[in-house]
Image (cartoon, rainbow, N blue to C red):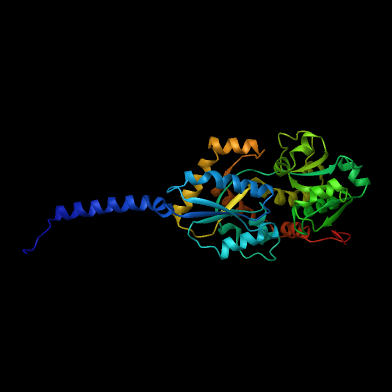
Length: 352
């Protein structure tokens, strides 16, 4: 066959056409990748807890907002208040955009304030976003003699806790040290066991449990006035708790306020979802956009309302920026906060 020659003009046209086609293929790569795939959403907490409730809610609705509409499934990987899942996502899970999960809001900061057991850098996760901010509270059972912080300075009562480094251990330690309260911390309960222990009279309260979690897991306690609300742990009052004092307002020493600022800062990302680091940029962008879109989905919002689940999102980019700032906290403040992560004298393990 005779040779065919392409003119310069034609060659440029072919190159331009190829570029357009290539650009379209690249733009569609996330959709092509996710089509027919299964996306796994993990919870690092118990199946009955509030974190898993958020994971379940997201899993039910996010698939239709992701290009290619992948199938979604929920898996529980409980352990270490989300530490097991954080280590898994960072170092074991494939970096392909087919898995992400939720763990405790403080987990991204753990390598800085409580590094033992951490195998990740919180700044390097692919943060997808947070479904809600967090306000933690301190409360006692309605039959307890301790009904205010002032009462807690005079009367010693047992409060239930999950583990030594859990929020419901850290917060009463901080209150004891900074405010002079006399909480006896009883560790070793699972999160779902503490409410039962309160109802049985084994412990009289819990300090460092999310208000949103309380509304989700024990709404009748609130409607039936079963609790005394002593304090809330956040920068500003929750709209539903205008008369419950902020611990930040109760402390006087500047070093105490700085320590509380570091502890409370992560509550701005109270229900955070993270994917492994270094997933492809287009898939990270697709997941982040889907997360923002699903948070406005009327179907998700209706289900959230039925389950008393608060929705107040921040973006994955905002979480990353927050953690970058927090990792620059002065060493002496970090060390002070870290000291509250370890068990103190007089604390007991449940059943001992």
